[in-house]
Image (spheres, rainbow, N blue to C red):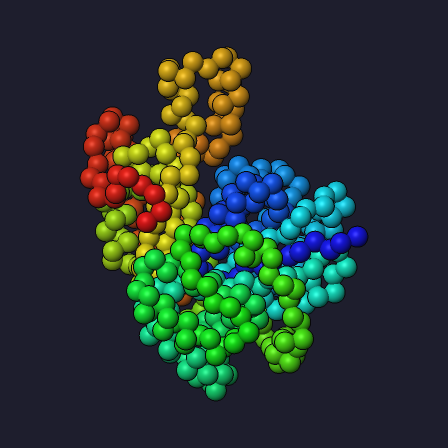
Length: 398
């Protein structure tokens, strides 16, 4: 029996893996070649899993859709969960392709070694996505990445640069994402700066996940021989905690915000402009605002950039919409789903995960909690009073 090809999507926090995966799923559906999917999210919220389920290409309860949340897929526990899930998948399904989206802080080596000895799955592509804007702004168009990595090695420090460089070293395809925000000369400079890290991997520029799925599905089989010596040197350190270069006592942490209240639009706007520093690498999740209380909004922040996207409509307002003309059965079914949510406002609620340096993350989380409506403001919203809202009225991924 022919083995099933596997493609791994790697990349640091906010590099665009979920956007690419959603695009690949849409293309594969049109080509009648929908793959099985594994999505790994270190946060308990499993935001990426929800977003993939919202594509309607693969349903949440589809046997071909696997989520591993709350742990790195590259950790021993993550590999064990993956093995159990794939064993169950292969007993009942024979997908044409397996796509894996890792969490941003995961290392590719444990996955590569897992698939090296697999009898039913064949590793094809280890694709690393790199935020080209980040390399331009924070690493001098990529020129300072290798020197900072070398300085970490000399100081016996495992910093973020180590993970970035090693993700590139183990890949056989590199995607420079968000290239629409850069000049062609900047993209060329970045590609030239990172090429020496892995001269065997093709470097391709892309934006918004726009790349033909055949370009990733049909990569020739992964060459395990090329990384054999590198694997021996790094195997024992890949799951060591990451530190933040140049900041004593700082480490990478993840914090979760749960609340049923909406964000005050103006306070949220002001907070973003004040608190988003290099220390808050990533925040992502779902929220609502009193000025648009019918839509569920996706918050997606990478470093100093924030994107908003409408991902659906809350069910609670629909229940009160007489124009819907529900049958009694439809109404009761919808009401039961709304009532099953722990919220004072129907199914509306805010759930965000924030990842970055521990001190900056703590400060940002405190600031975000101050953005929720107060009791008096909740009464004002319920009475139909207006709120200042500086956010773009036509909301999409920005």
